Image 1 (spheres, rainbow, N blue to C red):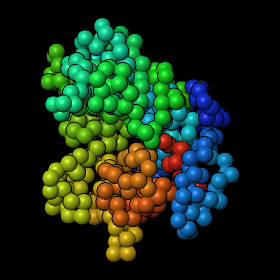
Image 2: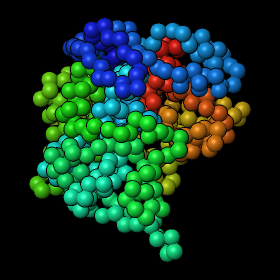
Image 3: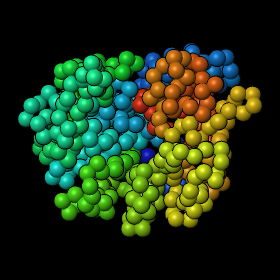
Image 4: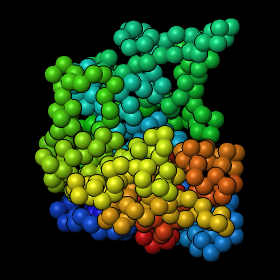
Length: 426
């Protein structure tokens, strides 16, 4: 993939406020198909977490190598992709979360794209997640517009608290009055305040007091100013499409049009969708963007899906490649399995994708809480028996990079992937 940068020398540091990082970038020299490369003009600060994870690792050659990098200068790297920004500690898809991802070395940052009542594009993970990711329920005049108003829990009758508020319920102007918070809700809440206090105990609310929501166009300007690449995901609409005459193709095209309007080189954009038809639309109608469009593979959701059995996923990898798909992106666990000695190795899915000539991106590291407590949960489900300490995040990352050959890894805390990419020399 394209990883060549021309940018001003920019020294970034993580501070409590994580101020906006600025720079300049000229992507005219970007060439598709290259391996991920370091940007040695942008120094970043990865903070203490990577070293903490290395210290938790079992003794190995990898641990020794990662330990020796502890005092090294770290640079921005396109192998490191900010998932919703830096969502482990900052409210997702906020300016502050994006700045944190940039500051910790992500060379690519994600804006999940959805739309408002007036069909303006904004950054949210889901069209209907406002009740759990913003303060909308605390603003009566906007809470009254929610598709499903807040309803308290009823412990006697076994009823959980609910609320559903969608970007399509409100206008862009109303959206911009909201404040982002850490994603979460308390299903046993009796009051709105209790419902909004649902942050997972392995995350933090320390940086959630003033999450600044962003339009898609604003995210483009922020990323462009920082000199990083962009990976927008066209989110599935929760409303019936067409929406007030706004068709799925209108939606898919409008997302790309905002990059064109901002004069962003297509080589700096990795448009994503779980909807294969969206990807095919971009390939056909916008080939410059379609060349590195990312098919987010959700076939893992099928009841009979088995990453070790190619008969359980269709279309085949060859069929995807023949349709013009160049990049596929499944979750972490689909790409790995355990061998007879309990070593983490590439899955048949991963091997098949590479044989078909597909590049692979994967998601999401640092989104599982304490690995020692639950063996990684959903994201590590295919290798649970090999997961027992926090350092195993690096063990998995090493297999993904060297054996699977992924070109990028989404992480809720990009510093970890940045550190690995710098240390291993990707």
